[in-house]
Image (cartoon, rainbow over all chains, first blue to last red; front, side):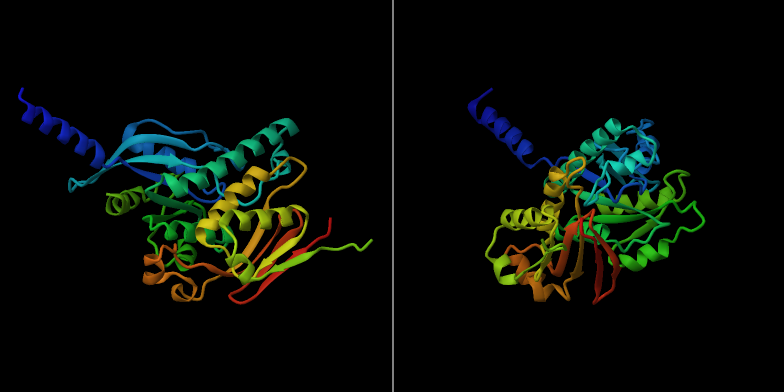
Length: 213
Length: 124
């Protein structure tokens, strides 16, 4: 192989490595108990047959971010997007271990859970600044969306110019209101789903193809 | 000894002369002493993100359990450093106006309207 061809190959390899776009990392963010892990499991199961993590009614079941790489979502028109899903701990400005004791946990376990949760939230906030290319912001549609944490988090996401889809979860429950969430965040698409029942996931996948593709 | 809750009102001028970490340390040190902090000019989204991150690292069992916070959104992007020119100058979107921050175990916001924040604060 002559020098010209060797140089050309090396240059091509270097440029490919330099300009190669890594798969978009889509963070699932939101307050505790919005159903982030349930939705993450649903997405991962629908497209890979796998699962991401356990769910529980006790807040902060997810204390460390979990990542599933290389999920390819497609539709009947042949559009596809391959993403990494990052399921994050519920974001909050306060964590008190006493809250877990009210769910019947022993003090040592509750303190451990609180410590892990604080580390997880700190890590999730750090990743939002450094490592996330798009966001699915999860809200419990049975609760008031106008909380400081929600407004602050959506503001942080907007300031980073990240594409964001807001998911109004738990629409299988009778007092769920996706319209209240649309009213709170009219600047973003709001997709009502039930992560638990799998309702309306097709619309979410279409929006993910549109926003994260 | 006087019993009660100390409220510190920090001017926009003072905040403008501080780095992000200086602002966060000032707020958290004050709040961890049990005081309520009122910022004349709120934090930027990036500063809010770092405030949450560092607050989490300061939480201890039977000690500091985090913060409660309320703020008014910026009236419009142009008035607070956002918009096209703000972005060209490296500013990250609209900031916030007056912000109230207190210890989570002492402060509870009971009402937040467009132009009114009502907070209930208990002394320890």
